Length: 254
Image 1 (cartoon, one colour):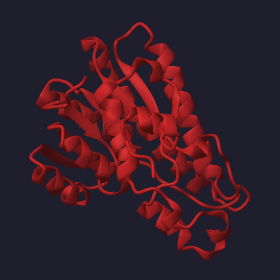
Image 2: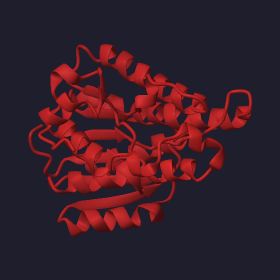
Image 3: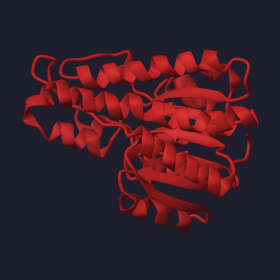
Image 4: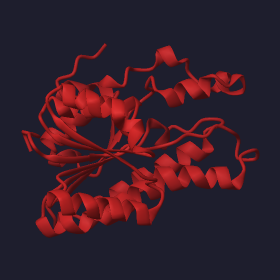
């Protein structure tokens, strides 16, 4: 898929951070962006930015952790557009705290959004992709999927589960032209990082926000991955700060 012009791309977590940056990057290729967040209003700024770049977009609000809501949304997209070319599961949440201190419901909420959210979206969208024998799925995981640290148990375990699910689905799809990728940004300047660093209890365990890469960098790698869909990277763990991957994507390493 060298060109993304007029391709139907569903992007969750599109209101800010990597999601918003990815929407702007994909818009430069002329894709039609179906933007998702917890509320449609939250995507208004991203939608305006996409349209200012000459692409088309629509904004939707629902909870990805709610299977019925995700299924209804995907069914609506298929009814409106006939197919989905690309599904990017970027919506996620973080939670800092030791295993002993985090409440069970809070831990479960992280798993619902970071693991069940992508599962719900894939479960709803995949039948149409496999029937058409065409489509790309990208799950945004994290370097924390394989680099655990103190106070990160809920987040790390959720991203590790998402990575494993991605790899398993790759094997499930070995007889299909549908491709699935896991993309794991390293430390990135996002609102979630700023929220974590604002808590003095966890500052000792976290890098400072200004040490992170700007969200535009993983967004560029994501757009390259969607555009080129290299078969040798399907189903494997791709951490965007790896210099060889950024060089392959033609992105300057700073």
